[in-house]
Amino acid sequence: MENQKRNLVISTMFQQAGHATGIALGWGLGIALITYLLGLIISDNLESFLVSLQALPSIASSILNVLLMALFLVTPYTDFKWAIQNGISRKTLWQGRILSLFLMTLVVWFIAQLVGLMNTPFDLVSAWHSLLSYFSLSLTMMAIGNGFALLNRRWKWIVGIGLPMACLVLLMMLAYSLVGLIPALSASGVFKSIIISNVTGWVILVIYLIIVYALARFFNNKIQLRRD
Image (cartoon, rainbow, N blue to C red; front, side):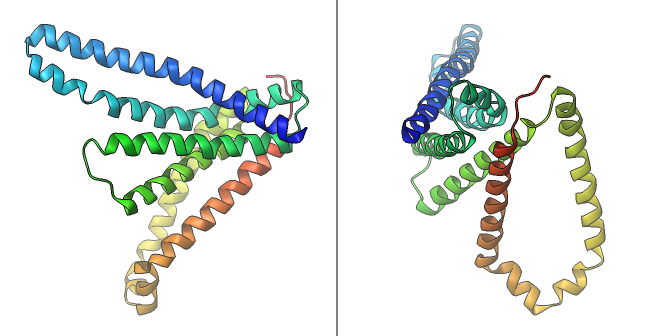
């Protein structure tokens, strides 16, 4: 029974994504095509028009990238209400949504790689780094979306405006405080070896993903029905 409900969550999310993708691609590619046609009418340059058409796959890939991030940013509370109405627990909802995230990210990443092959040869290292970037961004958007699902409309505006500004101020303060330490740290051989080590980047990435995953799941478990 739990597996059936989890599969229901996954199938429903893919249906939502498919519907949104159809609308987004229709509008995005339609506007681009109309723009190219107007350029053809004005310039009467068929060669330029045909060259412009080659950009359509890249535009479609970009639309899918934005849509993937937006989907997990704006739908958590809607998905939660739907799950409650269908007798689906928070645990099952979380499992279905996180699996959907991984599967959708793989699909969008794979399409981006195919489009990239039109311009550049395949590079395994670049593809692997790209996949990690996709997963990191998707998971980050899910954590933010789940966090916003805890807030009513007023607090969404407050946090949405105030939190980025607070983060900017903190980053500026941190950068200012580090200015005096940079010369001393740069003179340290240990510090240099840590900075240039490939292991450092992987450790930071793993810690970041663990934190974001934990926050996304914590927020998912705390979502409640509310009156906005």
